Length: 346
Image (cartoon, rainbow, N blue to C red; front, side, top):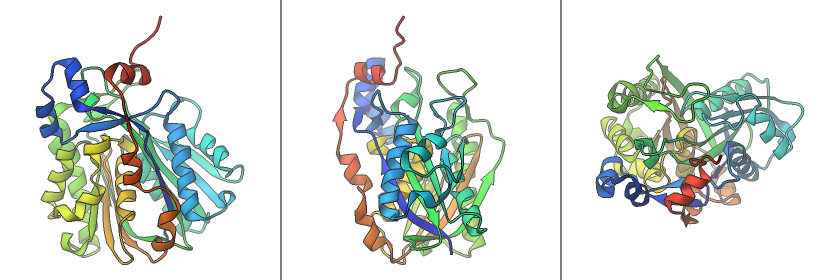
């Protein structure tokens, strides 16, 4: 059996409230909060990007995994905000954690599901015996144009997972993907901000893929919502997350542990992996978890994960997600704009 050996998360310290953004653009904050079910979001510091977030998350995963980084045979970093257009994030991460030079490494991009795509790639390589351990990371410092609806949710954060065969904290029992060409969200080369299809991003995009992937993997394994202790879905906003859970028959107590958007916003490639990490932080051996990511363009990766006994001794070796969320410093819009380089100097 192949599964998760270690996991780690990094969420930037800074936050900005919805009210602060709404004040600048003349929007009603209560309407935004009710509509998106988001109260505040994480903001990367000026010296933070997808590389630094990935390195910190990887180091936390190694603390829990308790393995020599030189045994990692593959590193995949999934993101839509890699700092270099030509220069891999994965090689920087590999060097920073001491995993070089005997490994394969690559950056992945599939909107918000590139991190889970990396988990699938590592799963295949480990299962086939090509490598002993693989490291998959989903991280982003998401972009939102000034005044755009995305500005209320696009945030920063990431999670890293070490995939292997020994000393597991959770088994990956099954995975399934549902993919189509649905252009609901995109950013062309050289453009600073993405464009999105408004309401089109809901039913024909997010819900079709998340719900189809979840239903198909449950049908494949002859399981239903009540057979799971927990479920985690991609969360571009709180409204979509809760609606998907309800459509699939999950109750609030099953999805609440991984429901983080109201507190940190949409971390894009980090969203499902961070939600899964928050769930692993409180899950008990034997608990079954359904995790479903979503990436615009469009596709969803679904996983059925069963928590193992190893979780008890490894869980406390690195900071938990909600502990990290509690540590925060608020910024106003001017500092936020400065940190995000929304202001371009001459």
